[in-house]
Image 1 (cartoon, rainbow, N blue to C red):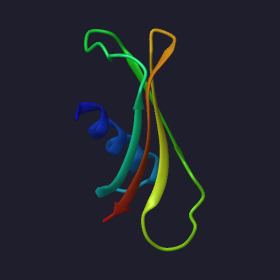
Image 2 (cartoon, one colour):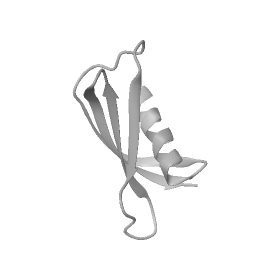
Image 3 (tube, rainbow, N blue to C red):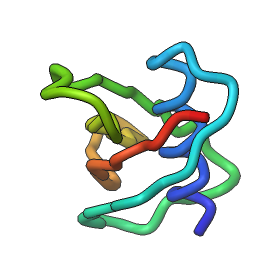
Image 4 (cartoon, helix red, strand yellow):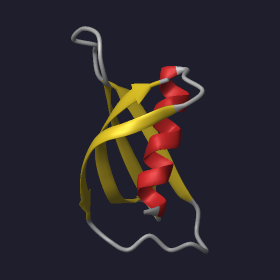
Length: 77
């Protein structure tokens, strides 16, 4: 749940939205994310295909390796 919330917040930040709802989340976890080590979160929006939710690819990198990836669809408020 912590990574999903981080994905939501980073997606909102990259979209420039102040609030939004995740309407879809597809994720893959390669390793456990340690809370006592820095985890770099990157968010890359995909091109909009029309009105409605926006898709953002989110990556989590820790210790030089990918820890998880998510693709979230955000319905911005």
